Image (cartoon, rainbow, N blue to C red):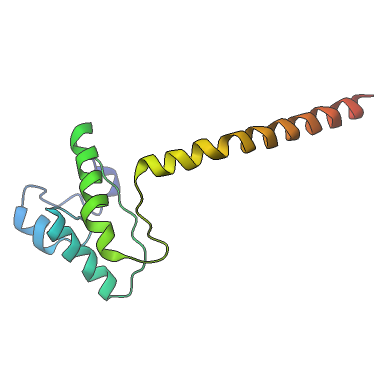
Length: 121
């Protein structure tokens, strides 16, 4: 029902596990190993990027799906653009960059405010 607006999937039986798990190319459903096999099929075709939409589940299940995909599937497809790092490392970099960002923003605002005052005169 969530995908009814797309039209193309209106006749899909989402309860048909054989279709969902084995034949569907538009849906990736299964454990990490099955998802790795599914992504590998795309990689074998030359696909170098996938856009995934993880939805239509309760929040805790969505978060678990994202966690499993990030922990087990993504690392199997190492590429210089695919960097999986611990969230704490990324947050530390963001926090370390914050003072420089705030200073650049302050300078921009100061310049912008000066420009507005000069225009008003």
